[in-house]
Length: 116
Length: 114
Image (spheres, rainbow over the protein chains, first blue to last red):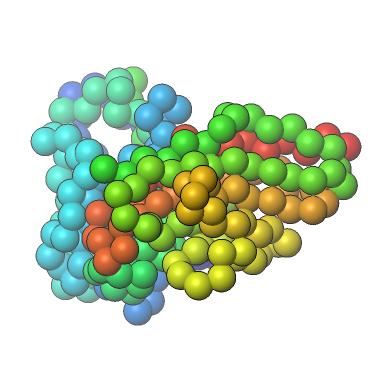
């Protein structure tokens, strides 16, 4: 157990729908990252939050949004889902926002999203 | 922009043989370098990292990697493969002091033949 908790583990939904993925970071970590893993794109960085504030944005679609709450858990919202959004979504956490402390990530087990 | 290239999407070795997984990076400044391992149905786990200092870095499970600036490489090795090493391995790079997350390679699937 890495200490990073992601729910749900599996999710099957239809095109056009909206889903929310949840992540609780490891105890003591203030930074949360979201990654998308697919066969064709590999691991893609989506977005980073630190202590409730957005810190960095990667290849995140406008249909996707995220937030980090005061208790530091984070949610990734995916809307108007398309077949191509089917992927494994990972949450990771780290101690810091920048520097080495930001780059040593602890990953959760992922949420597998299937869009039919 | 940073990038990572992992040579070989699949590498097969015999149990007991040397494991060599190749990683080359592109970065305008010396980066931090990482190797992560992903076992089936699990998240990524940090194997080892290079930040500064000694260029030969030792990690968990007997793995090590050497940072070669002149070759912009960070290859992962293990002297003797075990069946339990079968997994997906990812090389990653990040900017020093940056907050843009890690840039990962496409991954190398390591197959261990009995």
